[in-house]
Image (tube, rainbow, N blue to C red; front, side, top):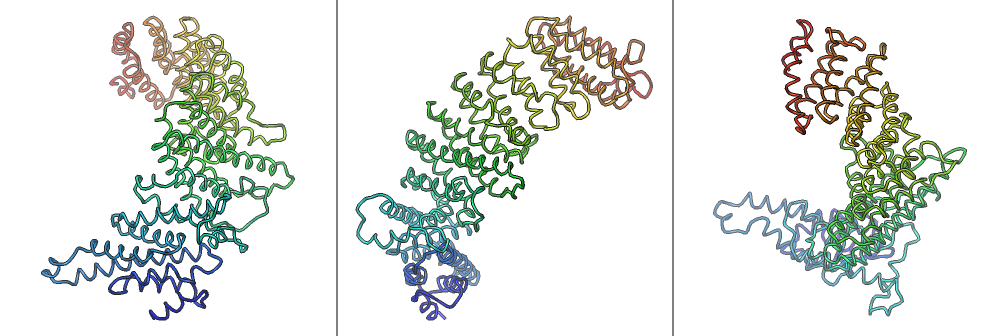
Amino acid sequence: MYRNLLAHLSRPTTSLPFETIQAALAHHLAHLSPLPTPLAATAVSSPLFLSHPLTLAKLDALSTAFRHALHIKFDLLKRDAEQRSALGAVFSRAVRTRLALWVDALIKGLQGGQPIMRLACSTGVILGMNDVKLTSQGYVENEVVLSLAEVMDLYKYDTFPLPSPSGAGEWEKEFQPQGDGDVDLLSIALIFSSRSLPLISEEKLKALPLEILLQLLTATISTAFLAGKFLSSPPQPESPIMASIAPLSKLSSLAHSLLLDSRPKDGLVTAQTTLTTLREICAHVETDYRACLQEPESPALPWLRLKTLLFSTIMIAESVLSSIIYVPPTSTTTSIALTTLFALSHLAFVIQQFGGITASGDGFKELKKTVYLALDIIASQGDEEGERFVYELRDSNTNSKDTADFVLAKKAFVLACVEQLIPVLSAECIERDVWPLCESHLSEPSHRETYESAHSVVLAVLSNSKDTVKRMVPFYTQCLVDNSGDGGLDTHQLCLAFSTLVRCACESGDSALGWFPVDSLIREIKQTRTDEKRAKRLRLGLISCVSAVRGVQMLERVLVEVRRVLCGSQGKSTGPPVHANDRMEEVEKLAEEIIHHVGGVDGEKEFVIRWWSEHRATFAVDKEDTELARL
């Protein structure tokens, strides 16, 4: 059987399936005695694997054979150790030590082979070592790094008009794309590298020409997505590169992090180039997507590929942004952050499929982290960069032919970004660029993300721009009242909005302005007689204002009104009837506001605790409500 394997390996073609050759090679590598070095040397130079064209399927079979051989050898050594006597075990090497020596012999057999073949074999070895939890040996890591460097060197001579080294001519031809639709050898080398390099120590990875590696990775990723034109291109078979886009993106993110850590100046330039390419890809995709929507019969969209593009962009951008926050701020760092946000804005229609940036719960954590990192970097540069970003995205690059869903997805993305930049925007920018974005969506809950984002932006404006508070309080008070019904703001959102509105109005120094939202709530509660759910939301909104008012006088005033609304002066509510369970919930909410949220400024805490001690019994109006009195 061993002779048959050697015979097949010595010929450029075989009648056997590659799976059979792969299994036989793995078996004999593991069982060959005393060492696998000769067979490894035969395999790495085998005409069967080297025959034209070299394809990913061939090299994958070779790599998998070496990986499986390590598994088989590990099992053989474990069984041998179990069968030894206790005395024999004392004087024999440990299983992992024997396995490491076997791996050393295996790697020695690869010497002299073509770089791409050595890369495939050593990738299989290091993956196998990772599978069995064997500490990666330095010579295995060296083999992976050196073989990749040699492949990149060959590609350099093939790409640029430089003199070819001796013996490189034949191999240069192999780096051209094959006519059978398979990928070029450089892409194959990068695919194998994306599997093995993340398992290698960072210090050894820094020995690689990381700038060139990143340029090649970016070009390969761009090729996988057809430079962003896959929506307008004829349907094509799934590319092997696309199947490996996740590890390729992960390797790109790792290489960016290493380069920015070791050589920040070079790393910033390379990162800017990568993200600019990704932005161009995303822009092409958005253009073609809009064109597809305008066709009479829109074709089925490849959502899996669109989401893959989003994941790839986020993975690379997150790594870059996480690294540049430790780099002294420059115009390049800001440009990188802006480029990231513009790239993601082009994919707003894809982001919408995940609930958007502001989705409640954990949502898409990596997306949120990437966006907020970029916004933090922009905000750290002051109002100029923030205002430029808002200005460029103000119209969201939409037109009258775009569908409503597309426009709303773009607006939701812009609003989510603008909310974080409000603290650094001028009052003029807020009035000119931000307010028009929000106003039309404040009473349109049909598109939830845009609706909630618009309200969040308004609250951010109230909290950070005192110049606009006096003008906005009357309008926004009525807006909140109008949006307190079913389908509008939920209870938590309404309470937060009223609390923020009252607090900001009180902090403006105008007590009448601070009382305006409270008075509006009281009047609306009295007028709401039939809608119990809405009345309950309004009462809870009023209770949330207790901790928002400023000064003992206004605090006492709002507490009196809360007591009247909940219980009435004679034990009856001045609003619509309150169900016992609702009353329990509302009194608990009032107790929470008083005990945990009212501050200790100007004697407010002492007053409110004393008031609660005096009046809490009045919230229990019959025997069934005695539990309320204990709060």
